[in-house]
Amino acid sequence: MHIAKIEFGFYHSEDGATTRMHFNFFAKSRTAKEGDWEAADPTSKNLALIYFGDAEGWWNMVSEKSGVKQILAMLEFEFVTGIRSLWHLSTPDPVALVYDVPKLPFQLGNFGDGGQWAQPGLRFNWKVIGI
Image (spheres, rainbow, N blue to C red):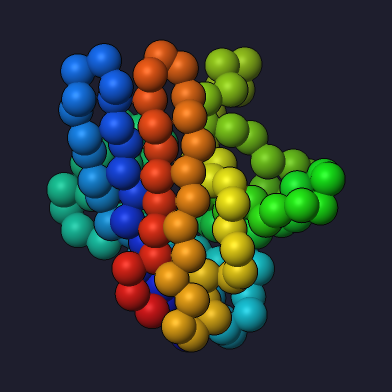
């Protein structure tokens, strides 16, 4: 079992508030495209419940429809029929959708990062901080 520790950060441009949380991502191999994730500490668990509606679940990597970039999704459960976005207002259950994954985060020595914007004035960032 391989573990990658990923840091997620939320920045709100209107008041300058920044929130950081750490999650552990588990995979059976270094080239896995899915697996389990959980909050790495009690503070991150509480923050995850606020932002994601859940503090553990299933992660999945897929290619964007255009094939230009990879997408890392944090889901509440294994969800094989599609990806739902954290800020997509029509979805009943919030999940995180993270863009610009250069390679699988479990490849040894690859410390990737990425992010996306969301309304109103939110910036969502992620980076691999340990494998």
